[in-house]
Image (cartoon, rainbow, N blue to C red; front, side, top):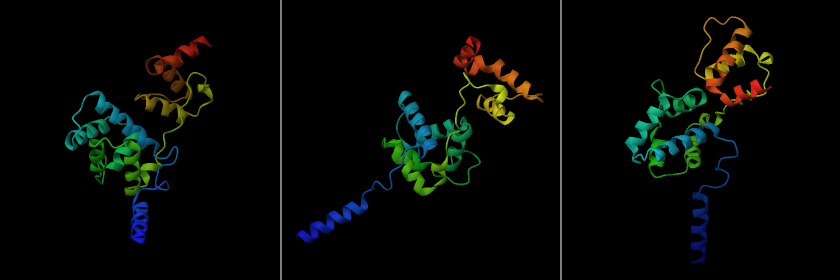
Length: 180
């Protein structure tokens, strides 16, 4: 009898997800962030937490996603050009209010690329010297804002455009730069 109980306990321990499968700090950064914001938006809008509504909201949310968030949507099949569809691996657990970290753990098992996504390091526009940045970085700032610089040929053109748009997209940084 004791042997049977011991065997049952050992079996249960092997079937339970262990610490080895848990996400490490900073792992699945984009997944956890995007799904966290998405889940919060569902709660804020008092959405009905059923599979179909969640999938529809996810597709709508992914349509507006940019950068790494868009890449995450591509990996789960929530974009029009995605090759695979594992949206149900997100919508079903969300309908049961499963924590986003657990959802990301399951997604990692399906496609490890999902957890390899990292957000680019954000520049502190209040203190950075725009003249010392590369044109590539200046273009990236504009791209993050959803803007472009048509007709910009010189680095100074990009800097001018960024400082012109800064009050709209980064008002705190624009204010701090005028205080310098």
